[in-house]
Image 1 (tube, rainbow, N blue to C red):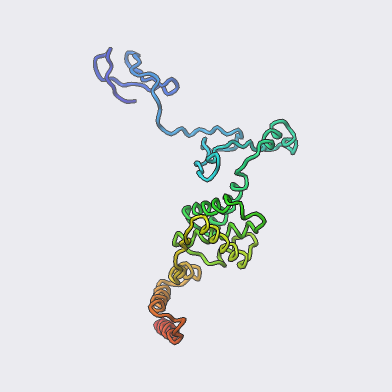
Image 2 (image 1 turned 45 degrees about the vertical axis):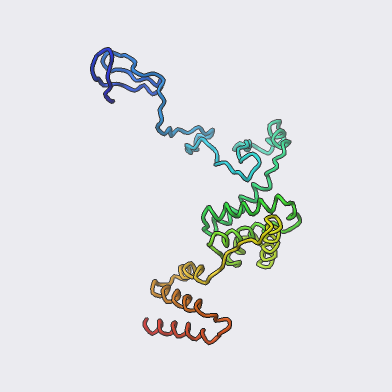
Length: 263
């Protein structure tokens, strides 16, 4: 209960909220002080058909600007416990009769989301990969190509553009059977198509050894001291072109030996 001013009692009195009618009633004289008020608090009731489903969510997913209808179309799912006769019923026939132009895009976006989840990537990288695939799909030039390699290449390019690069081997591990060679070819193809559409070169970002260092050290279970030593070796190697001056590799070896002696 709460207090409110009652015009009949001429003073502040305790009021009662009738949530079913939306009324605020004086507890002493019964005067309705406010009617049809809106309850703005959360309503955690479930409206699911199945009694065992306790999910209180009553809305769908967010809109997707990459889809024709924004992702707001309605799809009638097959009820639980119903046999395959559902597809032969009038309801199933009407649903199958309507063609969804975004069906292939939806499946592709689901595949990209699955690969992103397996790699632990953030949502911005997944969204960027979706945008890249949408641009390639709109050109209608990827038909007949390995779609798994195309999707994996889109994710690889998105990681590069978001400054969170992943190696081709890591992308290949979640690419549903696509090989590194196929992903490499698909990447070159996508970059070429994007350059033709944009009329300029595609910015891919520069890969540095430090971009992979902390993640690889974490996977190896290295200590903080070992990670610092590895990062120092990377910084030293970036100061010199060790590809042109191979003797600088010995400096990295000396760092590793010094670290081993400190251990």
